[in-house]
Image (tube, rainbow, N blue to C red; front, side):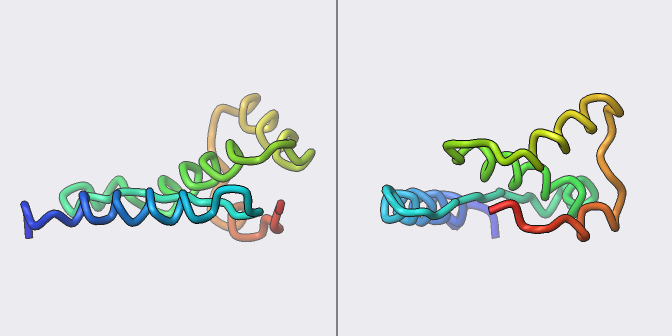
Length: 91
């Protein structure tokens, strides 16, 4: 349903929730998807973007994130399937 204002409405909600969470121990991450690009919107495409948004909101980078980043930087490729789902919470 093009032109119905879904993106504008969603942006308004994201802004509102972000404002409400100021000063709280809450992370906000969001992703806009397009139905025409469904092939490029797999979990392995979306999860790194959401994780990056959450990490950027941290005052101190957890050591696990730094180790993961360095491994990725050295290999220049994303982990495959099970490696993503087996990661423990870093919060």
